[in-house]
Image 1 (tube, helix red, strand yellow):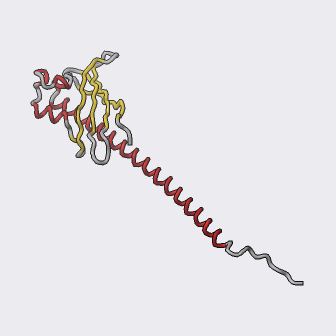
Image 2 (cartoon, one colour):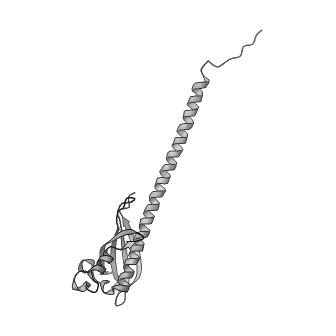
Length: 167
């Protein structure tokens, strides 16, 4: 009696190897795509954090400059700066306050609005814009500055929020 061994049909190994190779290729492409998507999210979060840091630094620089060099502007709204109430700063100095530069980035002062808060304390609502560059869009930050004394001195700078925070 002769024994015969069962052999797979001819041409079975090559298609099976191709299918296995394609499955491995698709799996690795899927992992690579997930890694790139996570990297993009991380980079976007880093850019947002960088913009926030730049805007906070600009706010600190602006509040410090007004407090130390031009305290008469602390209680005057930005729209009134060119008037006699804002005459304690020359036009060139006012322009420098309106467009501070922080770490090589251009920032624009959009609003400086003194007011009295509900608790009776003087405050300034501050709005800054980090101007767009090739790497990121323009971003805005709103701040609340607590003031006290005469002339008014800043005692607290609070970031209220960012706008234009899209990737």
